[in-house]
Image (cartoon, rainbow, N blue to C red; front, top):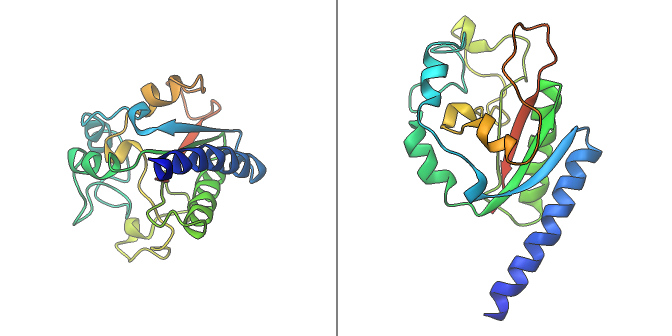
Length: 180
């Protein structure tokens, strides 16, 4: 029993550390979540299939060979108990911050730490040219591509996200790091 209480207290301390680190690295917002806060919905795959230009091309796309389905991803992510959500108005910053937090969590002993983020590593995904991913150690799938309803999830925390009329409007990009 005493060990469990120490672990919870340590996790609380670490959530503050990781959210602070995300802000220091350039995130606009960073909030801690419990796994129960993550809203899963397998309908997200419909938006991927019928609305994303990466479908059947991108290396982090759920259409790639060997990818799990959203309902299979859910079983994997529900093994975690907490993590942090990273928000930025810049897609690349969102991914870089989440990957840096994932790496730091791993170093601190959270060996299953894993980030999710819309991939922004390359100007054009090599998959669009039928080539291998040039950053396979850093490329991560987007939250929605693994069955997470990003809108419902981030709105619980008062974070900004709305549908846009066009691509010229300011965009909000979200990443998440599942830590423990």
